[in-house]
Figure 1 (cartoon, rainbow, N blue to C red):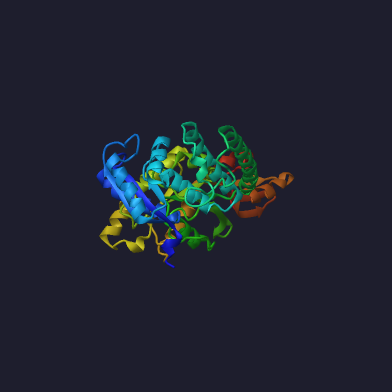
Figure 2 (spheres, rainbow, N blue to C red; figure 1 turned 135 degrees about the vertical axis):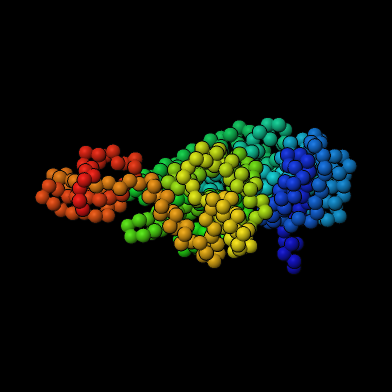
Length: 424
């Protein structure tokens, strides 16, 4: 049996001229096709209409809507997905006209996240995002929205929710989810405080979905996380401790990839997870050097970082997949244009240069200090070994002379012992 017969037969619809220019539309549409495939759909046809605004009743004009209904029968499709967001009225009218379920791009992305979520926290976050998206649509009259839940694209997530569940019960479930996520957040804070106690810097990989973040993560950590070259392959954050040099470690964090017009429900729901990125010492933005949409993808990432209020955080830009770029002038121009380090996570090219740059950037956040610790305060030595990178330690008549690298925010704790003229 052909694999496509096992998938939902999907017709994709969209409007060229609404929200996207002609130049943008092709790239956005191609990405839309990949999103449908990533959700497990098999696109069998497309209906695109050139117009300035969606039709209030059918999204597409009445003639195109009739054409869509005919295509559903010819192609034996069982699902329609719209590129732009649909109103409850448009969904209801299209479903009545075509006899099949109708979703929009936000539904689609939420569904992909529901498929990818493996951890308890990830599943809670996705369900919260889905219910926050459903609730106002129910309020505006899309009474059959919840009837889709239970199987197929757009139905994963809150599986036990039934059609008869009213807005009050949905709000109650949202409250429960937020309470459960608060507990998970408290557990994460304990882990974070443990890292901060031992002064281990955190470095987060950020970037557009499918830019190669997980492949780079595996290259740097040998973690073996999934990297199948599909959109949103990594959803739940993964962290590993790696040793840059003797007594110099970092926590490297791989995070969910971003995408243009990322549904704000997801950004809100995943802010807890993204809190680790917010608190990172350093960001590494991974760009897909082989993508013709490099500038647009970079803009989408920067918009999400701005929404998280971390667009001004210390950052290294990495031009990944440089093995797909023509060497010489083309590659050199991109490196200069993006002020980036060229790497190939798949081949290992440029990794040594990246690690060298990570060391330099991390050290910028630390200060080298010399201290004389009296023997009466020798208990501070243990604290220093936990909080700092002690490079030299010498016992003298007056006390213990320490040369150490310490996070700048902690230097004040030891200001009474700092003596820059000491010899180690």
